[in-house]
Image (cartoon, rainbow, N blue to C red; front, side, top):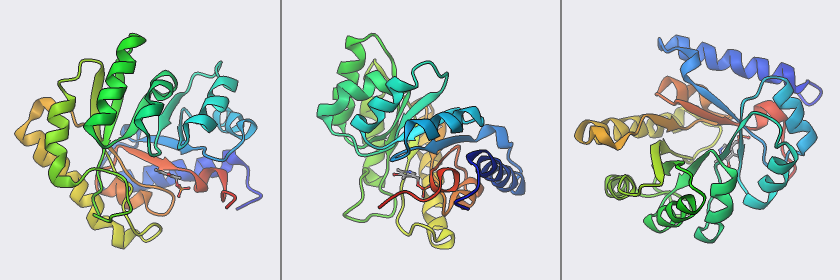
Amino acid sequence: MESMEIKDRLKQVKARIAGAAEAVGRDPDSITLVAVSKTVPAERVAAAIRAGVTDLGENYVQEAQEKIQGLADQAVSWHFIGHLQSNKAKHAVRLFDLIHSVDSLKLARALDKRAEVIGKVQKILIQVNISGEATKSGIAPNETLALARSIVQLENLHLCGLMTVPAFFNAPDRVRPHFKAMRELRETLTMKFPDLGLSELSMGMTGDFEAAIEEGATIVRIGTAIFGHRPR
Ligand SMILES: *Cc1c(COP(=O)(O)O)cnc(C)c1O
């Protein structure tokens, strides 16, 4: 694994995405692969882009800023997937095409304000704490509707869907019910309020992305399987 080129790993990941999609009758092209590049130096990110990566995910605003500036001539989309503090909203709006981790109205309002200042409509997802642990970021499932309804009032945000980071990493069968619950949550909200615009479901990482795709993920966030293990 460690000696494999990024290109070969990417090819394998794409084949696994296609396999999982086809197993449940989905079009593999309807699934966006976000290559998670936290802790990965810019040269290796550039290699991933040469190998065909179109979407990159980062967890820390400051780390991402340096990479994004260094790779500014590359036609790729940048995703923010980490915990975001309201006081970093300004930078996040400037740097990222899609912010996956909106979990409060306070943060949504801060992003809306900053988007207005630079004349941007910021695409966002609501992060849901589907497995309900106290330590995880995300809003409770039963508060998601209220947050979504407040967010759709904000003119400089475009709500695209939901995201989750469930418990039990690397245990697909234990995490599958949570993926399923996310799909059901989206379906319930969309049925009641078709104008919410919750078409995207961002879920699934190296240890469990096939289960996530089988349960309806439209965006998977994969780091280790593409870049190898991160330093601790
Ligand atoms: C690090 C991270 C990933 C990627 O994890 P891997 O297990 O390396 O694929 C995906 N989503 C989030 C929110 C992350 O923090």
